Image (cartoon, rainbow, N blue to C red):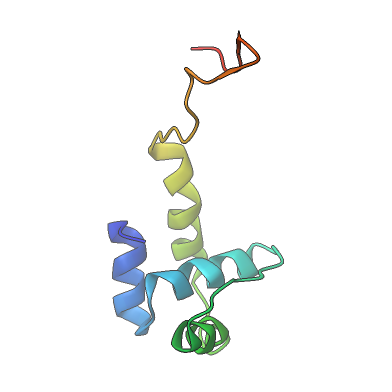
Length: 87
């Protein structure tokens, strides 16, 4: 939500970073089911059909996952005394 590419696209289209990400998912063909209990965010999540990301913008977002290495799993995690993830 704080990636400068996503934030700058949000500024360009007058949308939140979440809306940019939801729109990207729609355009690549994913089924999007956002979850929120906040009324304003529920409305915001539905306001993603009045703009479309360009092919260049889609390519830029697609490249984010290949240029930044993030690890969300704890490689030191053990289950039943056995290491789950290799280093």
